[in-house]
Image 1 (spheres, rainbow, N blue to C red):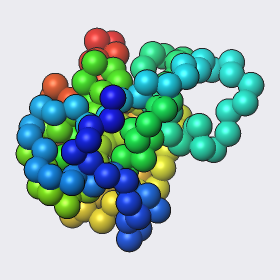
Image 2 (spheres, rainbow, N blue to C red):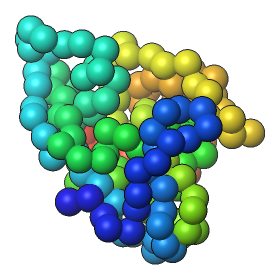
Image 3 (tube, rainbow, N blue to C red):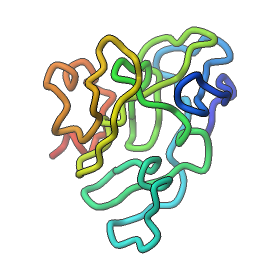
Length: 151
């Protein structure tokens, strides 16, 4: 389900990232978490899985078989989450621009990450949806994983 309008390449800060090859219109699906589903009893959790699978229920996560796991976080993202697993453009994305989403749009557990996105809106620490400021939640309305907004 990876869009042909994006390409994976190295970033200055975060190793690999996903970038728009051409202009991407608002609402377009960029990638999806379409891989293995794990629950909290999974015995082989490791840092890679812990940092790349997204939460979609209280004790369940899903990985990606494609580029979704390479889309970096930003506290001022151009994408969000729809239908639990799809990374979707929240606005038009210019050719050459890095595709990003806010990792707090899916999470509701103890996971935390030091943020180095560099945005003037940087929150410094990324964590669960419940730690996301109310103004940010309102800004992301319609682009937060549905399992979080139905609680």
